[in-house]
Image (cartoon, rainbow, N blue to C red; front, side):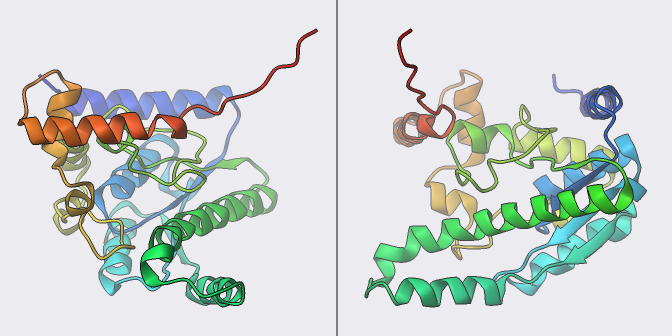
Amino acid sequence: MFDAVREKDRIVEFIRNYYETNHLKGAVLGVSGGKDSAVVAALMCAAIGPENVVGLTLPCHSKPIDAAGAKLVADKFGFELLNIDLTDTYDTFKKQIDLLGEYDEEAVKNSDINIKPRMRMMSVYYMAALLSAVKGGTYIVPGTSNACELYVGYFTKGGDSVYDIAPIYSLTVEEVIKVGEVLGVPEKVLYRTPDDGLSGMSDEEKLGVSYNAIARVMNGLPVSEEEEKIISRLHRGSRHKFNIPVYKKED
């Protein structure tokens, strides 16, 4: 049975040991107003102290609830929260794309959704480098993907797939929530229906399958034939996100 208290303590020790071994100082992460980033922020605060954690809200045509949730988390755990509004940057980029030709909404939909996490990745790494210079110690970027998302490849290549440490990499959605309960993550954030804040759909609507079903498949438990089909397709189709083929010349 999953022991959330023990797991929380082990993750905190894992983070703390990594920081001590590599002589690191702080962390910068995007705080979306959802449970995953909230739990990671709380874990980082517990491991290295809230004074060494900086959260970023990175709105890009985003809903007000996202920033409100992020503030709840920052106020609860006591870390600094900065806002970098990417809306104008995104709009400027899109204007340049429009100059290249006319594309219908369906054609650009996936590109539009995925450019936003990539802009956010650029922003958190910029701030990590800047704070490293200003604070006199190395700041790194924690990842906020959970095991269910990773199993079906529900992340953006070159976006939220880029990070320096992965505290919840092996936790299912249910396990993330249980650890969040132990940490005291605000309920409005912890139990909020997960969505990417980009597509206007919940995660499960977008995936076509529930996180519970994904976790069951990961643990070798039965699901419906349709669920098995969807999860298997997503899993197989996303393996390219994890491995980059490298040609090696012959000696």
